[in-house]
Amino acid sequence: MGLIKQRRGWLVSVVADQRGGWGAAGGDAVGPTREVSFNFRIESDAGGYLLVYAFEDSALYADTWHETLAAAERAALEEFGIPHAAWEPGSE
Image (cartoon, rainbow, N blue to C red; front, side):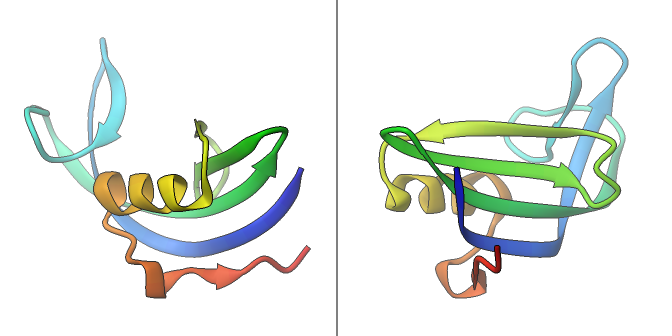
């Protein structure tokens, strides 16, 4: 896997509950919210791209697979509000 793009320190409003875990606030999410600093990466993967996101302290992380780079960027915009211009080139 190779790092394509990254965005470090992006603040995201998250909602959490004991049963459902955590997720981006908005939509039908209900519960206490807080601002959390995330680091985001888009990495090449065999046949596609991974959108990897983690709390800045790496305590929690997740990823989603996308067929194209554009689809990974679109998911980051729709789920976390990261515009195309906010991405930085990968440094690895």
